[in-house]
Image (cartoon, rainbow, N blue to C red; front, top):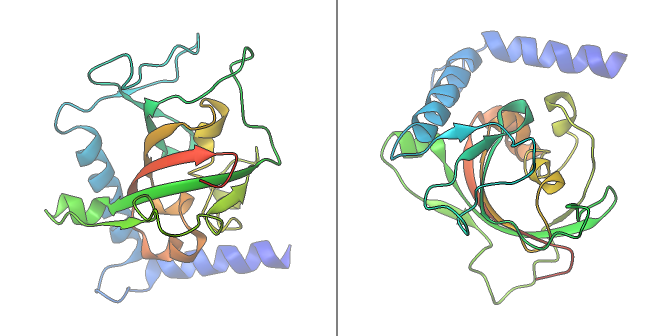
Amino acid sequence: MKLFVTISLFFSLCAFVACDDGKTYIELREEEDNAIEKYLTSDGRWVADIPADGNFLTEENSENPPYYRLQDDVYMQILSIGYLDSTRHFFVAGDKVYFRYTRMSLTDWADGIVSTTGNMSDASGSSDQYYFTYTTQTGSNYSMYFEYGLGIQYPLQYVGNGALLRLVVPSKMGFSSEISDVIPYLYTIKYNLKEN
């Protein structure tokens, strides 16, 4: 209970205290929402709900696949769905999932700055430091307890081993060390059950 009160107090305080660049937490959240909305509605991009029949449009079967709406304002665009078994599932809770990614700040993108970071093109190094243990836990209240956030785990219930996606991840669902920066990211991410 004390932890909950402490966390609640911290976030309440953040909403009223000005940040380094003179913006309040609320202003930064509005900027984040605007950047996500601008990205998802420009250049022919479109948003859809998860198909009830599980038949996703992907870059493999469509020229312009949608960004599918997941929980907690996370969006995924499937470039390659990866390997799925006959049950149409592959990853299970407790799996050690390795990933390679690049990401770009959507607030910078909205301001005309395009710069990416990540480990996708680093073929020289091992990706063993980039993994998480898959959990079916959901909710922004829990995301801060996971080093890479829960946002990058949400698609795993829909895709298979080797899947390649683009993800729009708001700060509340991103890397735990960066939640207070209030920066949404566009990820290009590939998942594997073994080190890649």
